[in-house]
Length: 302
Ligand SMILES: Cc1cc2nc3c(=O)[nH]c(=O)nc-3n(C[C@H](O)[C@H](O)[C@H](O)COP(=O)(O)OP(=O)(O)OC[C@H]3O[C@@H](n4cnc5c(N)ncnc54)[C@H](O)[C@@H]3O)c2cc1C
Image 1 (cartoon, rainbow, N blue to C red):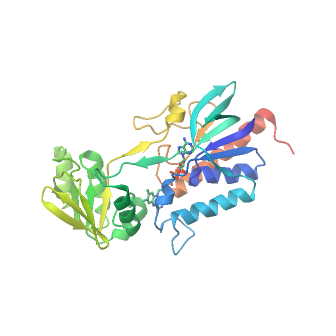
Image 2: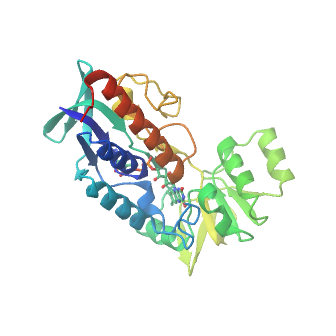
Image 3: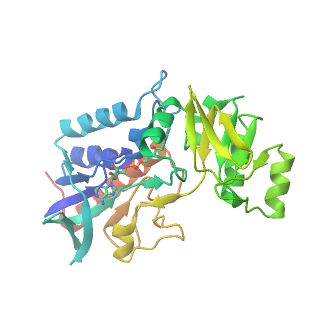
């Protein structure tokens, strides 16, 4: 019986592993290797790295720090969680592990532009021609020619946010026509954001720019932000009965405990700011709460 099993080895899961290992708890960390942080060509808003740092380098540093205290990432996909008394049974491919507490740090997956193949997607991402997070990198598109693929209130909100960085901004409908109510149209018009119908479905790199085929023909941009929503990877907790909002983000207490006692969650899988710093902060709070809860239940005297 482990004290805690962490599911997910992104910034949230790895931070929790560092804290819990340094509290002398017995832990396991299962991860299937699809952290959103691994997609970051170079983050410039994560404090402490004035020259920026590549997402994979940051993850590597965190893994080494966790390993230094005995917390090793195991490449395993968790398929199911089950309650066992006050604790949990954690099912991976063909194996079952038992834990007093579980921390879910499984993150989210951004929906990709319709019709874009993986090779072009990754090439555009690493050139900065395709971006997913204006909170993270809106600064980098200051005064550039930018498009948002999206519509409705979500596409409108994303475009209005990016308008704070550039005035050369186009909102492209993913489907044949925009789906915008009068309020969205008024906000877009007030901000001088151009609206173009789709469908998007064909793309090509033109040097460092990404060209998108629209109802008006091919249009080329320095950067394109898809605003098509995300898949929230909270199924393991939701299947166990944990409360989540309509999008699937887990509801948690101030100490990051879900509605199921002993099941904690941190990072993008929880409602909040989808940022590395936020994931790390939540993981530190959750890990300390787990430690104190176990101290109350089983005692952790040395
Ligand atoms: C292109 C891009 C650029 C970004 N730039 C920045 C930036 O500059 N600054 C910033 O602060 N943030 C940035 N972000 C956001 C940042 O990457 C996320 O907020 C952060 O990675 C969230 O950490 P997390 O640990 O919650 O989730 P993740 O990093 O996504 O990690 C979740 C992990 O859980 C694992 N997992 C999922 N399900 C299972 C399962 N069933 N079993 C085992 N493992 C599982 C996954 O494989 C993954 O490794 C960016 C994101 C993107 C996509």
